[in-house]
Length: 173
Ligand SMILES: Cc1cc2nc3c(=O)[nH]c(=O)nc-3n(C[C@H](O)[C@H](O)[C@H](O)COP(=O)(O)O)c2cc1C
Image (cartoon, rainbow, N blue to C red; front, top):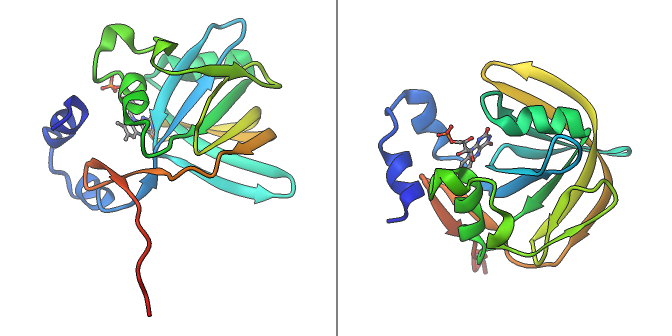
């Protein structure tokens, strides 16, 4: 069992969290870079908002220093991980080793239009400028206007039942 799984399984079994653990989500790392510095955080709260204009959203806990950095930098990149990149998710969840939470040496990155780090070999990358942002409960919702989108066609890294998952197609007749 990974360090992330052990920590998540120690969480209080509140009905909301338990029910949410049944959801299947794509694991992503949201990165930013600029005058506020270079940061990254693992998220499952990512979704498409609109195709025209192309908008996406991510939800990040306001306790995370990444929130202030994204606000100041004015940009972020959502890197959808593939099913061989769970170590990248561990690195940016701050749970494998809190002292290296913002250590980008766990993977290769390139800089795209906004200057945010884009993960090489990711399932997909959405390089965004901030279109809007809202507080909701403990989290900050960032709506990003997509400046560039890329995909490798690789298989997604999913998260469900408090562990990483790989998807496989149903063999329907
Ligand atoms: C699979 C997974 C999904 C996560 N999704 C989110 C998310 O959507 N939003 C968020 O703010 N933090 C999310 N986190 C937590 C952050 O990555 C990070 O662990 C946290 O901000 C720092 O940990 P701490 O709150 O225990 O200090 C997720 C963590 C994991 C492992």
